[in-house]
Length: 188
Image (cartoon, rainbow, N blue to C red; front, side, top):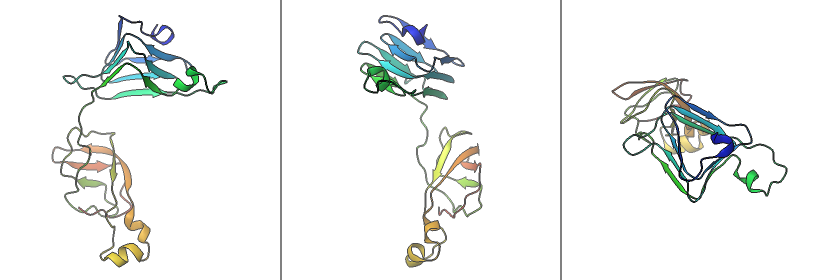
Protein backbone atom coordinates (compact mmCIF):
# COMPACT_ATOMS: atom_id res chain seq x y z
CA UNK A 1 0.00 0.00 0.00
CA UNK A 2 1.25 3.49 -0.95
CA UNK A 3 0.40 5.07 2.40
CA UNK A 4 2.34 2.61 4.58
CA UNK A 5 5.14 1.47 2.26
CA UNK A 6 5.62 4.45 -0.02
CA UNK A 7 6.67 4.02 -3.63
CA UNK A 8 9.96 2.11 -3.85
CA UNK A 9 12.70 3.11 -6.30
CA UNK A 10 12.13 1.66 -9.77
CA UNK A 11 8.35 1.40 -9.32
CA UNK A 12 5.45 3.56 -10.44
CA UNK A 13 1.96 4.16 -9.03
CA UNK A 14 -0.86 6.24 -10.49
CA UNK A 15 -3.83 8.03 -8.95
CA UNK A 16 -6.18 7.79 -11.94
CA UNK A 17 -8.96 10.15 -12.95
CA UNK A 18 -11.85 10.00 -10.51
CA UNK A 19 -9.84 8.18 -7.83
CA UNK A 20 -8.85 9.23 -4.33
CA UNK A 21 -5.75 8.25 -2.37
CA UNK A 22 -6.56 8.63 1.33
CA UNK A 23 -3.98 7.83 3.99
CA UNK A 24 -4.27 7.74 7.78
CA UNK A 25 -3.67 11.04 9.54
CA UNK A 26 -0.07 10.16 10.45
CA UNK A 27 0.99 8.63 7.12
CA UNK A 28 3.54 10.51 5.04
CA UNK A 29 3.69 9.32 1.44
CA UNK A 30 7.37 8.54 0.77
CA UNK A 31 8.16 8.60 -2.95
CA UNK A 32 11.39 6.90 -4.08
CA UNK A 33 9.95 5.75 -7.42
CA UNK A 34 7.30 7.73 -9.33
CA UNK A 35 3.81 8.81 -8.29
CA UNK A 36 1.61 10.08 -11.14
CA UNK A 37 -1.48 12.14 -10.28
CA UNK A 38 -4.10 12.73 -13.00
CA UNK A 39 -7.07 15.14 -13.30
CA UNK A 40 -10.13 15.03 -11.03
CA UNK A 41 -8.35 13.32 -8.15
CA UNK A 42 -7.93 13.73 -4.40
CA UNK A 43 -4.86 12.90 -2.30
CA UNK A 44 -4.99 13.11 1.49
CA UNK A 45 -2.05 12.36 3.81
CA UNK A 46 -0.03 13.87 6.65
CA UNK A 47 2.62 14.89 4.12
CA UNK A 48 4.50 13.92 0.98
CA UNK A 49 8.25 13.35 0.74
CA UNK A 50 9.97 12.95 -2.62
CA UNK A 51 13.48 11.61 -2.02
CA UNK A 52 16.49 12.08 -4.33
CA UNK A 53 15.50 9.11 -6.54
CA UNK A 54 11.78 9.96 -6.57
CA UNK A 55 9.47 11.80 -8.94
CA UNK A 56 6.04 13.29 -8.27
CA UNK A 57 4.30 13.99 -11.57
CA UNK A 58 1.05 15.95 -11.53
CA UNK A 59 -0.06 16.34 -15.15
CA UNK A 60 2.15 16.70 -18.22
CA UNK A 61 2.63 19.48 -20.79
CA UNK A 62 0.50 17.39 -23.19
CA UNK A 63 -2.17 16.60 -20.56
CA UNK A 64 -2.28 19.36 -17.92
CA UNK A 65 -4.36 18.46 -14.86
CA UNK A 66 -7.56 20.01 -13.70
CA UNK A 67 -9.38 19.68 -10.39
CA UNK A 68 -6.63 18.04 -8.33
CA UNK A 69 -6.91 18.47 -4.55
CA UNK A 70 -3.99 17.55 -2.32
CA UNK A 71 -4.68 17.82 1.42
CA UNK A 72 -1.67 17.58 3.73
CA UNK A 73 -2.63 17.47 7.41
CA UNK A 74 -0.36 18.34 10.33
CA UNK A 75 -1.04 16.33 13.47
CA UNK A 76 0.25 17.10 16.99
CA UNK A 77 3.85 15.89 17.47
CA UNK A 78 5.63 14.76 20.62
CA UNK A 79 9.06 15.58 19.14
CA UNK A 80 8.76 18.78 17.10
CA UNK A 81 12.39 18.49 15.93
CA UNK A 82 11.95 15.04 14.37
CA UNK A 83 11.93 14.69 10.57
CA UNK A 84 8.54 12.96 10.77
CA UNK A 85 7.06 16.00 12.52
CA UNK A 86 8.72 18.50 10.19
CA UNK A 87 7.38 16.68 7.12
CA UNK A 88 3.76 16.71 8.30
CA UNK A 89 1.54 19.15 6.47
CA UNK A 90 4.23 19.68 3.83
CA UNK A 91 5.29 18.56 0.40
CA UNK A 92 9.04 18.13 0.73
CA UNK A 93 11.07 17.31 -2.39
CA UNK A 94 14.70 16.36 -2.74
CA UNK A 95 13.90 14.69 -6.06
CA UNK A 96 11.83 15.71 -9.08
CA UNK A 97 8.56 17.59 -8.73
CA UNK A 98 6.81 18.11 -12.08
CA UNK A 99 3.44 19.93 -12.04
CA UNK A 100 1.41 21.00 -15.08
CA UNK A 101 -2.02 22.52 -14.49
CA UNK A 102 -4.53 23.84 -16.98
CA UNK A 103 -3.48 27.39 -17.90
CA UNK A 104 -5.99 30.06 -16.85
CA UNK A 105 -6.12 33.80 -17.30
CA UNK A 106 -4.38 34.87 -14.07
CA UNK A 107 -5.63 38.47 -14.12
CA UNK A 108 -7.71 40.66 -16.38
CA UNK A 109 -9.31 44.08 -16.69
CA UNK A 110 -12.91 45.08 -16.11
CA UNK A 111 -14.43 46.15 -19.43
CA UNK A 112 -17.12 48.21 -17.71
CA UNK A 113 -17.68 49.65 -14.26
CA UNK A 114 -19.16 47.23 -11.73
CA UNK A 115 -21.42 49.22 -9.39
CA UNK A 116 -22.01 48.29 -5.76
CA UNK A 117 -24.70 45.59 -5.70
CA UNK A 118 -23.64 44.11 -9.05
CA UNK A 119 -23.45 40.32 -9.35
CA UNK A 120 -21.81 40.27 -12.78
CA UNK A 121 -18.53 41.46 -14.25
CA UNK A 122 -17.59 42.01 -17.88
CA UNK A 123 -13.86 41.19 -18.15
CA UNK A 124 -11.32 41.34 -21.00
CA UNK A 125 -10.20 37.71 -20.81
CA UNK A 126 -11.34 34.59 -18.95
CA UNK A 127 -9.52 31.62 -20.53
CA UNK A 128 -10.42 28.38 -18.71
CA UNK A 129 -12.32 30.15 -15.92
CA UNK A 130 -15.04 27.92 -14.56
CA UNK A 131 -17.79 27.68 -11.96
CA UNK A 132 -16.26 27.40 -8.49
CA UNK A 133 -13.13 29.41 -9.30
CA UNK A 134 -12.37 32.28 -6.92
CA UNK A 135 -11.64 35.81 -8.12
CA UNK A 136 -10.54 39.00 -6.41
CA UNK A 137 -11.97 42.27 -7.71
CA UNK A 138 -9.35 44.84 -6.80
CA UNK A 139 -10.05 48.25 -5.29
CA UNK A 140 -10.33 51.08 -7.82
CA UNK A 141 -11.43 54.09 -5.80
CA UNK A 142 -15.09 53.21 -5.24
CA UNK A 143 -17.45 56.18 -5.36
CA UNK A 144 -14.75 58.82 -5.02
CA UNK A 145 -14.64 61.25 -7.94
CA UNK A 146 -11.75 63.42 -6.79
CA UNK A 147 -8.52 62.42 -5.09
CA UNK A 148 -9.18 64.35 -1.88
CA UNK A 149 -12.68 62.86 -1.50
CA UNK A 150 -11.45 59.38 -2.35
CA UNK A 151 -8.55 59.40 0.12
CA UNK A 152 -9.72 61.76 2.87
CA UNK A 153 -13.50 61.97 2.55
CA UNK A 154 -16.24 60.29 4.54
CA UNK A 155 -16.06 56.49 4.24
CA UNK A 156 -12.70 56.71 2.45
CA UNK A 157 -11.86 53.14 3.50
CA UNK A 158 -14.78 51.84 1.45
CA UNK A 159 -13.19 53.31 -1.68
CA UNK A 160 -10.27 50.89 -1.39
CA UNK A 161 -12.00 47.59 -0.81
CA UNK A 162 -10.85 44.53 -2.75
CA UNK A 163 -13.51 41.82 -2.76
CA UNK A 164 -13.16 38.06 -3.12
CA UNK A 165 -15.97 36.13 -4.81
CA UNK A 166 -16.73 32.71 -6.27
CA UNK A 167 -17.75 32.34 -9.91
CA UNK A 168 -21.23 30.82 -10.39
CA UNK A 169 -21.33 31.23 -14.19
CA UNK A 170 -19.09 32.43 -17.00
CA UNK A 171 -20.08 32.78 -20.65
CA UNK A 172 -18.06 32.83 -23.87
CA UNK A 173 -18.17 36.64 -23.90
CA UNK A 174 -16.43 36.78 -20.50
CA UNK A 175 -19.47 37.91 -18.54
CA UNK A 176 -18.79 36.44 -15.10
CA UNK A 177 -21.56 35.89 -12.54
CA UNK A 178 -20.56 36.08 -8.87
CA UNK A 179 -21.96 34.25 -5.85
CA UNK A 180 -22.50 37.44 -3.84
CA UNK A 181 -23.14 41.02 -5.03
CA UNK A 182 -20.24 43.48 -4.73
CA UNK A 183 -20.25 45.83 -1.73
CA UNK A 184 -18.31 48.61 -3.48
CA UNK A 185 -18.06 50.14 -6.92
CA UNK A 186 -15.16 48.89 -9.05
CA UNK A 187 -14.19 50.92 -12.09
CA UNK A 188 -13.52 49.38 -15.48
